[in-house]
Image (tube, rainbow, N blue to C red; front, side, top):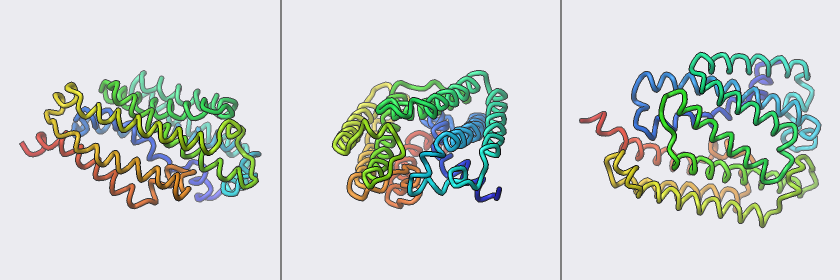
Length: 294
């Protein structure tokens, strides 16, 4: 097995999703504290290992279906480049390393990490075949990342963060299903849950979740609790980047049909990257400027 095959199997490009572990500390304006940043980084590494174990598990379970997919049939296990036993060995090593690091960090971190893996075991073997349940579990996976980030840094996760994280994850999951549905309509059958979806439902669901996400973010921006904690009422300016970012993602999905892989869309679309960095920069200025310059 080559290094290229190993990297393809563990999907390090998808580790960007685990940056959600930093979100609780970031919004609490504590990410500049060395201890908090260190613990969040160790938590990120632990979750990356466990997430990669989940990707290997998915490839092991999905190999027969992946062979019918125009892109996924090139994955190492589906193509036969990596044997089943090699896949099991890699999965075991990743899971052991991730849970060992998580247990070292805190008991709560270990609980959320194991819960994430267990949820994905049920997802891989059965629940991913049930429409709506499948995308809801993807949303739960992102929530567990945020809860783990709060646990490892000792930061309480706010109700706003929970709602917004789930809505964002649902938008990404719906976009992914839409991309898969378009491939299926071309004659490739590889996911049973797609029987419970069609293009009008997926399009409307994405628009609904996007609308609710924007409204929830605006409510967050004008919340007295949030403006009081941040010490500024100008937080609503960041909403412009959120609205533009969501519109761009909808454009990529509904107009250009480019979001079967949300991670790939984020890593390859310069427009989306600029908007995301602008949002992070503007929020960081509001949260950390007083600490850095006063």
